[in-house]
Amino acid sequence: MGINGIVKGLGITLKHFLETYWVDIVYKGKRYGTEAGIDDRRSFDTKGIFTVQYPEEKSKVPEEFRYIPFLVYDEGESGDKEIRCTSCGICAKVCPPQCIWITRSVNPETGKPVPKPAKFFIDVDICMNCGLCAEYCPFEAIRMDHDYEIANIDRFAHHIYDLDKLLKPASYYAEIRPTQFKEEDDARKEKEAKKAAARAAKEI
Image (cartoon, rainbow, N blue to C red; front, side, top):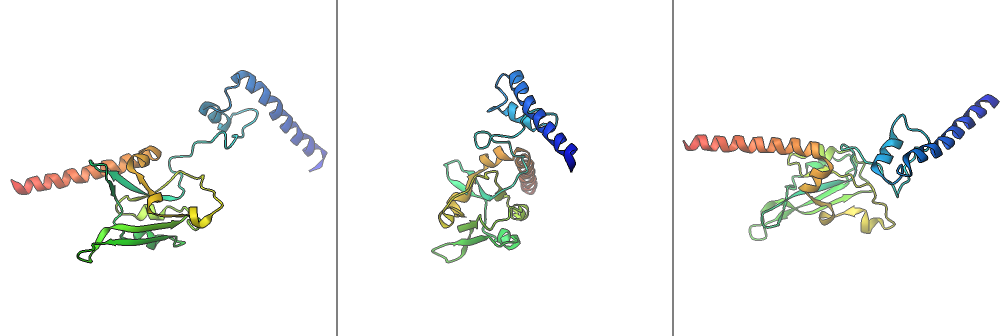
């Protein structure tokens, strides 16, 4: 690299060091702890320090960011959780690392299977966050989460998610993935409208 390369590298470091103080003066201390300040430091033309001071500061994740899957449920009129999952098992079949386990509910009186999961487990330490489970789910019941802060010292107590830990309302899904939720909701409403029109046509 030579002495010229070392001097050039030190010069860049010194430039960023001095620019940090100048930009802090211009922003009057509002460059830290605010969304605008984080966005400025993440821009291509930022000057001075550009690191995000995690965990005090957190960068926004893109809408299509995917991490551990979760199960979507709709909130019924009486406040019941209407789980979209029918325990069909497609997600478990397409999962490359085989980290999903499902047990289907059974009607105790008839012994026949019920389209609802009795147990649902995901080993988050095995999950590779590929999103295939969400992509292949025919009922839009499993989706990828944005929650990446899941570190813990007890793997078996906290890193094997059960049904209770996996269930999240559709309102949460709409909050983290508004574009995708709207597209799916519009398609669902259109499908229901076509079914209603077909039933009305038969009755005439």
